[in-house]
Length: 324
Image (cartoon, rainbow, N blue to C red; front, side):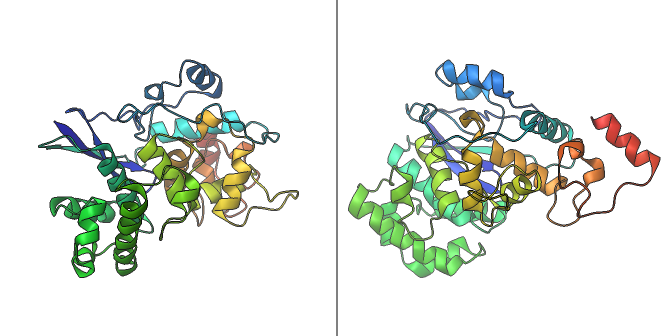
């Protein structure tokens, strides 16, 4: 029997299909991710992804983990970045308010073919864009229950039917149209499968860089780049981790942030950085009035207390020292 599992990657709820009756969450929200030195050793030992501790990435359908040894243009990493990551992970592992990634599984009668699983990953990822997790999760489930999670069935379905099933995801009318177009392209060019490169995925309607890199990870188990959303973009700029090429100015778009971050961040951190920063961005390093007084790495952050008032009471300072 196969398993259809749903898990979170940052704000993205994804349905994933595996050929086992047991759905495993490889990453615990209460366990810290390996430090850089430990993770490098893991990469050297054939990159056993199960040793990492969050965000639902698996060796799927026999596909090995790829991309760990790909050379990229390097730049000097920012000072204390490892200590900063360690501090964020510690805060998130003990956070009572942080969002917890959900995992649910349902048994299916037959084994789901790999290309159908990959198409479902692509479809559910497209639906998740600019939509709350539980909403896109519900839309994906309704498509699945109506047999509309393959390129062939979506291609044959009426667009109005797809609209009704995916409502109320954000931009549901446009996404219904895009799903029809994607299904047609995947049937014509890939025999119902999905593209296996970022470049080809970006040619699909409704697929931007974040979706493309995420689908490469979840669909093909191939880490080609960092998934940068608004949380990663904001926090990396606040930390002074990224800047526009040849300048000291902040990056202006998530794509600029991705390129700048990939120039120095070790590749073994490319997958876990997104969900970690999403949790951190939702609970402490929020878009407005970040909680710098409750942040244990504020002493290492050049933007600390610049967007909020400094802690004046002894209790706030005492609490900060305890977190260090």
